[in-house]
Amino acid sequence: MSHIARIYTPEPLVEGQEISLPAGQSRYLTRVMRLETGATVRVFNGAHGEWRCSLAGSPKSVVLVPQDQTRMQVSGPDLTLLFAPIKKARTDFIVEKATELGVRSIQPVFTDYCQTHRVRVDRFESLAIEAAEQTERMDVPSVHEARALPKVLSEWESNRPLIFCDESAEASPMETYSKQLHEKPAAILIGPEGGFSPKEREMLRSLDFVMPITLGPRILRAETAVVSALTLWQSLVGDWQKAPYLPESK
Image 1 (spheres, one colour):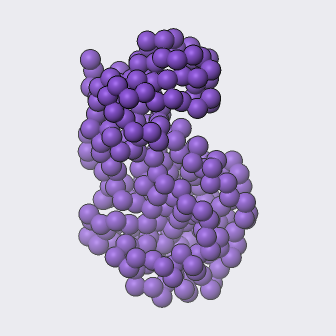
Image 2 (tube, one colour):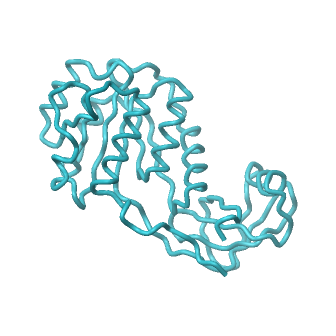
Image 3 (cartoon, one colour):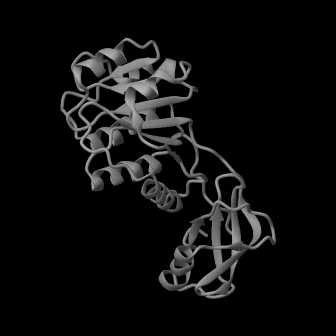
């Protein structure tokens, strides 16, 4: 079943209840995938599991008819990524890889040394959906409007540890905090290319819920730091030990 086209929809998935697809998805299935009426498509919506659906309607206005559920709904770990937006292509990379690595929530933050203040949430959402479709995720991470870092921190839930990736030498490896992070919701904060300002670093280190960590002796590019930090977290306390979410074969 894994080779069959797989798409996300925000619509409810109920046996026999038709789903009308927007033009973009209709074109993808009929022109790119070259599917015809009666073809099978795998569909998920982040709430009702994954369903086997049959294709109907016209090439320009595809309708999917749910037939049966192939996988129960599961959710990944409760992990949020906070990152400072950088140049367009590299920010796109961050959103895509964060989705692949299981992040549940994506929060862009404006910092003192932020490279750009242009954030298109709709684009990030599209990138996250595409990455979820391709990686067998059963949900799509939520993407939030960009906010100033101090504002985000002022409203923080203190029971959610914030892993602060500090490029200074005064930090410990993430493994140091593995017991505090085990089976708890968490968040990871990555700064811009210029790092965090002294004022931001002082503010972060003054907060009880912040865990300053190092990502090694080298200064990493922002997108490299994101992948490195998420990989470390997943290997320590994430869901990498679980079996892959493979569909049933029928």
